[in-house]
Length: 306
Image 1 (cartoon, rainbow, N blue to C red):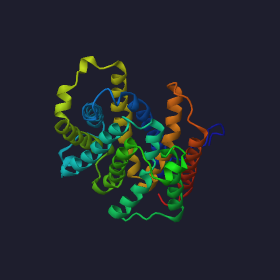
Image 2 (image 1 turned 90 degrees about the horizontal axis):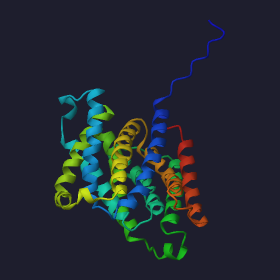
Image 3 (image 1 turned 90 degrees about the vertical axis):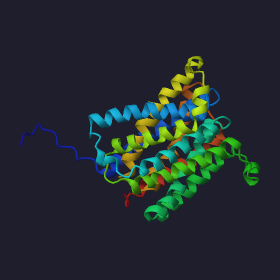
Image 4 (image 1 turned 45 degrees about the vertical axis):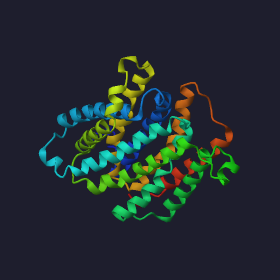
């Protein structure tokens, strides 16, 4: 053996690969809140998301054709794709309706409620059991999310005065939480790229039918540059890439742990807002962010169940 040769690095386990994929997922998703809030009142939610699904589907379809290939066997039981595409279309449309009035950091905090909801759907659909440590983490993360949603105002929390935008987006997040275990339940061994492509095609069809009137009424040539910037980011970074990352991780990690990475999103959003010149949130809001980070740490320490 050559003494100068370096020892081989151990290969990453499927679980570790899933964690890395979700780390990238959280950073990319965070950008959609800041950019989404900037364009939410410039174009209707149905129109921008229909185009978003078409563009993302084109990219993923090309990648799937060049990679694992698109075979007829991959698209058996097409109702699976229609169900998944419809659920995710609901999420994105409600997200943009919510961002018309909700602040990006506040909306991102609502998004952090999805792990708890995903854990419930994971048990209902897959009988995935939430460990005591995971339950504690979800409770702490939920408390942090509520602190941010109610803007660190105890009187508003006690009166449960939640903003309309946050409430609309909450229902979208429920659809997102359902999507995660549905992927695992409905996947029949199709590669992540192929499965994502099928979902995007189905979602695009749903959105085109739902938003046909908005698509025709939109003055595409007159849209502001920021709308096009947001559209392309949402299509390629916050859709195509994140869909693949989510599919990849969902097949390697429990649903609640996959969605645990949503706890990082508010922190990423703060960094996005700073980069866009929006400044820091108040110190009291940061207390809620800190609680979500504790929740993430607890979930990632629970490594006994991949």
